[in-house]
Image (cartoon, rainbow, N blue to C red; front, top):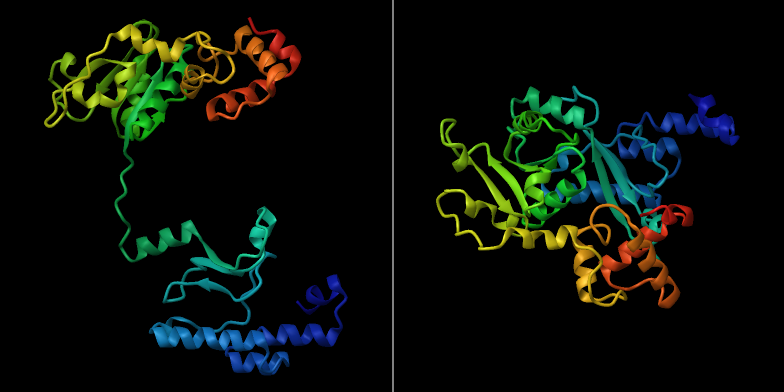
Length: 331
């Protein structure tokens, strides 16, 4: 150990021996004596820490251990590790004081902080041992399932549901087999499935099936509804559930105006309708880049450059990330 301490930084043997010896100290007084530091600022800081803990009533939960050495280089003060009271398991958590870490991420001045990280496996073992493991059933409001070649539209539906405050999972596999999506939804304990298929999508509709709030022998038309895309936020009103509001009247085809609109009719330089369109879809004509995106990008680049509005700026930077040859290939 002494060699490992001394050789990499060319410490004198006597200094290395003192360091190793000091780490065996069991009290702060013993450490100050063995390390030969007396009442240094660091020792005074530790004394204050233990006094404050004693005054607050949990001094008996702290003990000094000079052998605690955290491996992260950004610590600038006291470091600590937390253990179960019996001392059976390895450290549950560890952390310390760091004054300069945030300057690495752009802070113009030092921001003193104290933080720690948990060991998830250790805390789980401790909870099991104490028989206090919480019941945390996995639940999700919606699983969105995409028919073949409909993943972009499914992601659009997922976003609309999330904007309405729902927790949403997206089945990662495009599929013609509906049962695969329902099987996944059952596995993750989803309340409802939103199935995005071309026939309904062309009519501005999304099929939603409620998996939890009805009996197995209830008619299909009670448990499953085709809901206008533009009214997804009010999905509950389409099911006969207590307290649900009435559906919002809407013509289904109008729902497609958001998701499949071509380039808006107003001017191309940041008009409100263009901003609204790109807030709900990645490209001018939906979910695939087209020549319309290339043409508008080139015009904007030549005229005024990058726009300032949120969705249009995001679109502009995204289109600009493609090479010229890639943009020329768009039809």
